Image (tube, rainbow, N blue to C red; front, top):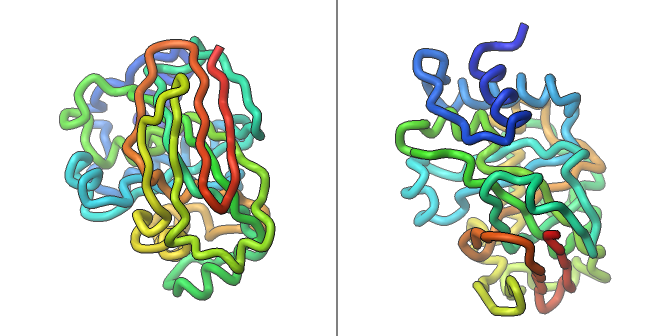
Length: 255
């Protein structure tokens, strides 16, 4: 039976409405938030998930969201697109875009402690990516961090780039990503912005409560490792392009 918290999240999604604070039904802590998130995934037919997203990889975003560290959300297959992608702006609630390093796992990572080297060894592909997020809350402080976790930490969809050739030879901490929206440069950053290194972010995910509640990470899953820029909120149809100097380019057209 789906909890009242998961039911409210699913109802807001179907109606494309902002999620109101859940009151007495809200999860009390991060663990409760991940438990509700799994219920949402179950109701969406997304177990096992197609992948995961990591949010709040910087201290600035953690402070803004009231988090002691990063947070993660499951990614359903229905929201994944390949570059060049086209989506309807009207299908999203106050959408934004993020400049992401993405990867696909080639081996399972069981839940629990994970080193950066173990994380790297489980990776099959690395690519540039765009995460589509939604500002679907009127008052984030009133909503509460556990409910934000339950609601997949802003996640809405994502666009996957073409896998980089010889990615094991690249310095992924130094790779620089830039995001253009409507033809204008809106932000840039490097792989080291993701907890020091993209694979450090993956190691965090493998050891996180998100991985635990979903039974670990699995071969074939996609991971959005976090944005090297702040989210850019968009007001209408536009073109979005993300390019990393060693990982290639990914594009998204909101129509």
